[in-house]
Image (cartoon, rainbow, N blue to C red):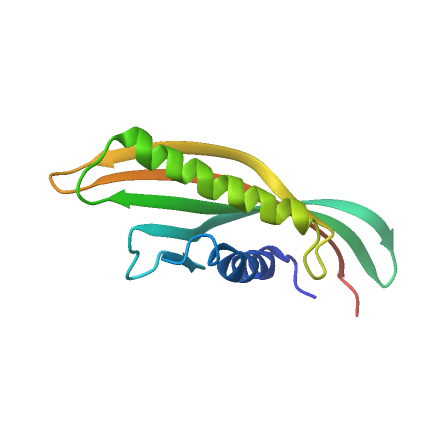
Length: 149
């Protein structure tokens, strides 16, 4: 086992959300990283963080409780430009759907728990579009051993 599950956890999260969001949002793009073609609705993964706490420190290795934090970005583009509130409301609706997916599936493969931790929203307006972006942090917990032979 490596020293972290954070990238595997991010991949599992994106793999869960892609098919789960499509029935409600058939035109959404879900991607591990910023996609080349975003479209008007997009969810993509961003940066990751993790914390470790030793659970058991016995031979042949250390059992670790990892809390991974994966950033997700929800992006809504309005063309032609509409009220920022409309884009913000759509971001909130997509987040609500994601929260429902996580509530229905509180574990994911080897990961014992997952849920929403924090978020931050913003918007931008150009000559031809209004963009709302909601950044959220999803926490994913796991246990694994490292340092063994």
